[in-house]
Image (cartoon, rainbow, N blue to C red):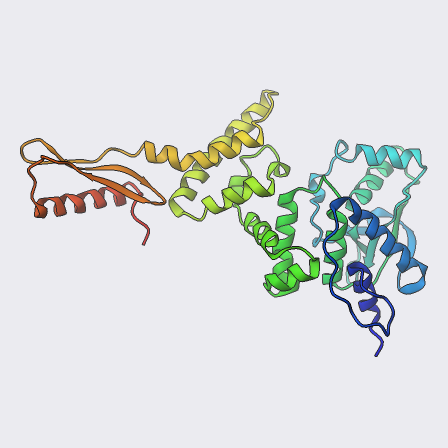
Length: 344
């Protein structure tokens, strides 16, 4: 039985056979990042050649085109500086040469289409129309895609874009995992042709609170490998409290540096301070020493961290077992009062 037209587009995105009578083949291994954009353009060229007829190319008013929220790229973080190269290219070529991919929307009187792939192109054309180039049109291919296929197409393009940060992609994956894959990580990894372990790390990074991300000069500073270590540290409630406190302090310092036209703290320094915060808090823990009636130290707290508490029983104190048990209770109560109690 022939597959539906939506399956043709999904097959093109997945590099599967497009012959209606052909059997599906096993997924191909993930290609190097540099080839993904070419693959996407090739796939779209095949689409427009007639293999899927429900794709057309139009010249659109960008004001009538909204941004699909399922795309990883943050539209609000785009700027003239970040799009300068693309803007200059569009001007030099007399218009947008590489079409975006959009789909039609319904029940939205303000918009006729939404961008699936091509957010920077949409922003750049909009900027040019507002800055001396009112005749510029947004060139787009109109495709019929369900949300899951749209997500995979947008992801395929974004893998070739160095300006889409790991954090943006991580948050996009976390939302897609719920929206398109019913929280089935294995299924999502298979559809995207990425390793389950790598995808799991991306989802973990997406869980870093905004209050901690605010410590960085830009969300683009949050890269997968170091951010994953930070996400793991936040699993410990006591460490998380110290990290969030440090993040607030760093965010205030970053704001002050911006106000005074100073360079922000680099990502590596911010990360170091955040990861060191629980250690510093441990070092600042008020000392606890239980002394015998004769004034000799009998029990003291040496350290307290997420691995546990180290308590020293002092030799020669003259304290008996019952006294040391009572001293231990006092030490544990002291830790609870200071917010350093043992995790149960």
